[in-house]
Length: 473
View 1 (cartoon, rainbow, N blue to C red):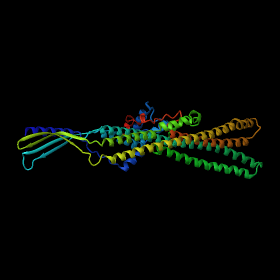
View 2: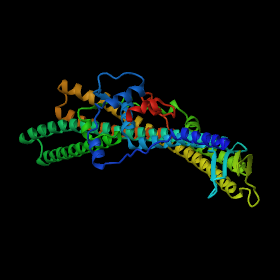
View 3: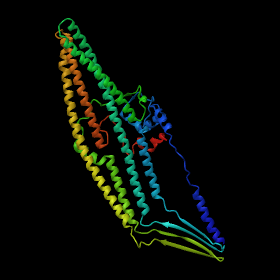
View 4: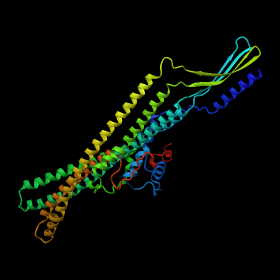
């Protein structure tokens, strides 16, 4: 049995060597108390956050943490802390692992049949599966297409985070400016009440006129209280969008380079917006990758009509005689030719094609509506700007000159200042609607349209690569 022993030892050695690469299970329990405590301890001084931001921007950040943050850096904070991004990264890692699974070759089969009870009977067989018609290649191509779709999904998740941070930061800055305008109006109304009270004491005006001014001052106090609550609410929403406790924003300042001057509609055309939406949107490109995977899956099922082959040597020991064989086995396609799975794959390909066309039509409509809404909002803002400039450049300035020359009193100037405050609030509301419309237009094309917004959103962006996310581990 020397030959049999040698054959058996070779097989056992091969199995022993492959067992060295066996992975072990590692538990990863979730402790709700610890995760809640970890969230509460998040802050902008996090060293891992600094490393992530520096790798994403490609430049050092000193001092850390900075006192002033902009939209880009605020979005990177959200990328670092967001559980949505962690889930998207996990899906992307799963898609990468699926490529390894798709490329794995089938393991050989070893069969050992000892004689019982006779020791003079022994059979050893070793079979190597061989896939035909390029099935392994189709699996790899499908897995790579799904991996590409997962990377687009990761970038899409990043864009949605950025969009959420943009809206939250916009609301916070607008609420802050609204509060400042009400405080300015309060000073004017306090002066107005003082001037009217002096006239009332002198008998120049009736009491209802003074009472009306006091009522307006009380309304302004209430507006300040409401605006203060709105500011606190938007600050909490901004902290939530960034993924940190609201206390983490204490003492932090935010800047927005071109908040006051959104890009004019003439800087991009409807055709350009529509083309960008159709060709560059991340969900469109993800749908294309998913369709490519469905196309390859159909090719794989068609290839499965051709059976695979198993080939391998065999050894049999019987009554002191050794026999060596070369066996070939194949599944005969007598009862079915994989018709069911082929039909299912064809249906899934049609479904993927319909989903792409549906998404494409949707984004075209969304981009056209967003462009129209932004154009209308810009027109409204332009009218508010013109009204405010006319008031400040003519009536307010002339009244100030007249008061200085003694031709008008402070009460007249006071009334013009209140009118200016009302127009300034209307202009701020128009600015907010224009910036909101711009954000919706950016969502329609999934890319920034403002010069100051340089947030990286591509699937290969530094903020989304493995190198930039090592700090999360």
